Image 1: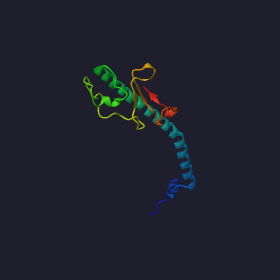
Image 2: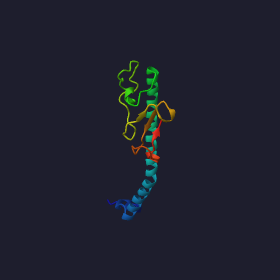
Image 3: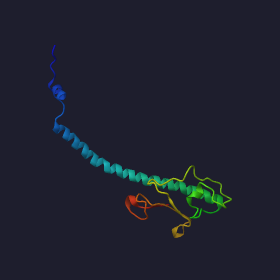
Image 4: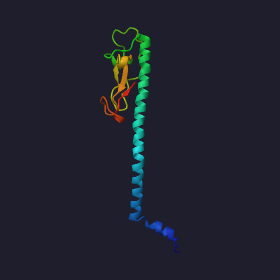
Length: 144
């Protein structure tokens, strides 16, 4: 017994033509061209948001350090004073952070100065994506 296929089913059984495949590939390429820049923009925003959140956590740890010792760590002691007791610091009650000091989202250590510029008690910053002072856009420094 021989079955007769509907014309639509016969066309599906043959496969796709080269033109149809090229049209589908072109549509996928256009969609990628539209979506990819937006997605990459969101990634860079999330890195900056992560850096700000980490800097906020470091700020809270520095405030706890100051509450216990009466002063912020010196620039020479750096942020390491939050995880390991500096020599001669008898009132230290840390560690003030769990684990090791975090790196910024771009893999660099956060910069710490005490006292900071412009009369601040301290300055905490990340050099940003370019890992160098200055810059704009994604390369801009984040200062807390």
